[in-house]
Every structure is written in C-alpha cells, then in structure tokens.
Image 1 (cartoon, rainbow over the protein chains, first blue to last red):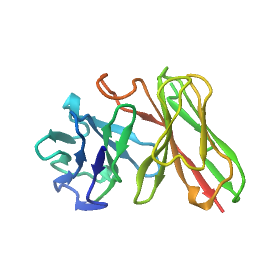
Image 2 (cartoon, rainbow over the protein chains, first blue to last red):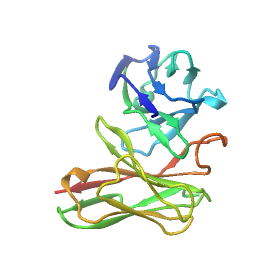
Image 3 (cartoon, rainbow over the protein chains, first blue to last red):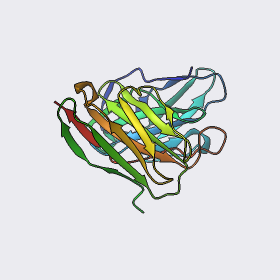
Length: 107
Length: 117
C-alpha cells in the first residue's frame, strides 16, 4: 500500500531562517511526488512536481529514493510562505496526500 | 478560464437532511475527484471518476454517493447527513489518470464548507 508521512503538524520559524518540511513515502514502484500549498482558507495549489526539478517561489524538493523522502526546502523563509503544505504521491488513478504541515513564519 | 467550480461555498444541514455538492471543470480533464479535509487528517479521497462513465470508491466512501453527469460535472451526494460529515469538501480534476503519463497533478476547486448540526 502507498503511504505518505509528514511527521510535523506545525513548523514555526522566523523570517529569513531556512525551512525544511519533511515528507517520507512508502511505495513499491518508482514514485511520482508532488508538493501542494494551501494558503489560509483557499484552494490547494500545486507547488512542485519532482519530475520537473523546478524551483517555485524559492522552494525546491529533491527525491531521495534511498531514504524514501521528498523534503521541501527553502533557504530563507518569508512571511508570505505561511500556509499548509501537503506532500502527495501518485498512485495508478489517484493522489495520496500526507496529513499536512502548517508552516508559520514570524517577523 | 474558471478551472474547477464548486457550489455551494457554505452549507449548514440538520442531521438526516440530504444535499448535493456540485462540481464542474472547464479544462477538458478526464478525471475528477472528491476529497474531504479535516484537521489533523489531511485530505482523504471519498470517490473518484477516472473517466466519463466510471466511478470508484476512495478511502472514505461511506455515507456518500457520486454521479459523473458528463465529462465536465461530478456531483457528491449526502443522502442522510451526519455530524461526522462536517468537513471541508474539495473537488479536483486532472488531465490524466495518474502514473506514467506525465502527471501534471490536480487542479482543485475552492471548497465547500459543510456543517451538520
């Protein structure tokens, strides 16, 4: 069975500090992973896809198959980064989401 | 483009009442999904429709029914609402079914906040 684990419910940092949101997955095949972001009371938006190896809003994420991880990183957090972040794993027909990590960036 | 449109945005029901949540997409996507979002539980899949004419159960289907009316529309029905169904419901769509087909992820609607009293 596929599973996504986000071990932190809440991550609180100061503006300018580095951020790492953890995501671990369990999947028997070759994974396809995503990060979604949800700003306060808004819809979920796609932030990153691992296959595109892109950097969006200063965030990056690298797939580590050995550690079965897909951690989201940003070197310098901004207050506007405060949001709920979800890691997701693509199955045959659907996405499985982690429980999410709330990121709070204080001034 | 509107993307994925959900109606209503807010609803309060009494226990035992029924209602239908509507979802429509204008992106010519094949697949559509209904999730519920609860604090500490993340997003859990209720039902999905991989293509027009098909529907399948997700992780938490009990108490819900769905209809894929056409390629654009996918509705979620609560036949007899219960307080445990108080949640935020999100509809989503995607162009492709899932793995191995250059998955571009999902596009989400803005959600329906449902309270059952």
